[in-house]
Length: 341
Ligand code: NAP
Image 1 (cartoon, rainbow, N blue to C red):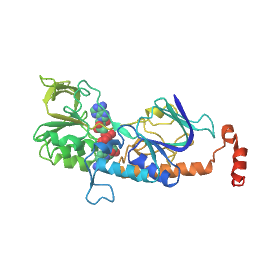
Image 2: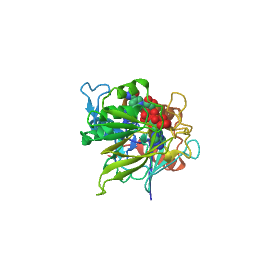
Image 3: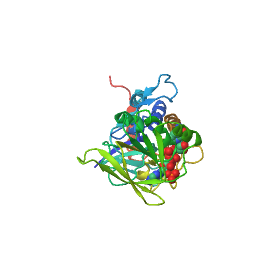
Image 4: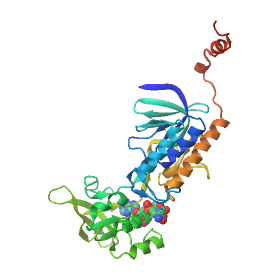
């Protein structure tokens, strides 16, 4: 177990657009941020192909390229990175003390923490889903649609994400079945209309996915067992690919025993700020936002979190610890002593 004696001004946990923008701003405020970025840094945009709606890229930009650029920009002003997972976070026991963040056995102390862990794709939790992940089951049509050229696929879900993915997928697949558990859709009218207007998108409702099955060789997805939600009649639907778009799960578990979250596990913040219920702990990006979930809104909230942290540090100056005061007299004397020679 290693405990760093250095007290960080700010630790940022997470490395999507929110985390890297918070790093850029706190670095430029001379706070030398430490980003715990995870192994697969860059968040969900690392799994995206072309991003066409981030301002400043008239020709569009590939998701991983954009994340590399955001990271480089934060690094240019002195951001430090730990390419590993934060495993535990503990809030300061009392005012004036530090928050503590662990990466495995290594413990870091910080006066402020910005939470930017984002959200992950929600899973259905049915048999075959995990086993056939990457072998037919996917959570990202923009990443994987091209593998299913002229083949039948399904999209599971009834929200805007499901419609967006279905429309994208329909450009590649022979047929796309939207499988949704209810007859009504959560998706906006315009998205639903757009999906309905595509000749090769069909709607299978109300159906629930019970199981994904591989073919005889056990290697690739071949069909799914769907159950009619009202009649319980089972349908064995053949497919080459199944894309799951049933929402996202904010990655708040690591802080959920001391940071307030809502019924869907999103971290709650005070008004339009990024302040959580714990003084000195801020939250930004998809971890707090289930509505907009855009790279640009996440980046904007990362900027807000950086400013909130900076103002917190300004308004709550550090109280020197007894250890820090030890030897201060000697140091002052040494500094004022006439130079030798
Ligand atoms: P969402 O609106 O929460 O929709 C999730 C869908 O998945 C719902 O239809 C839900 O069914 C279904 N679902 C959830 N859990 C399920 C389960 N275990 N099994 C089967 N189905 C399940 O999520 P989203 O579509 O990701 O959208 C999130 C937000 O982003 C929304 O505010 C949306 O408007 C926005 N968004 C906008 C755009 C756009 O405008 N271009 C694109 C994407 C997302 P029920 O309806 O039965 O609950």
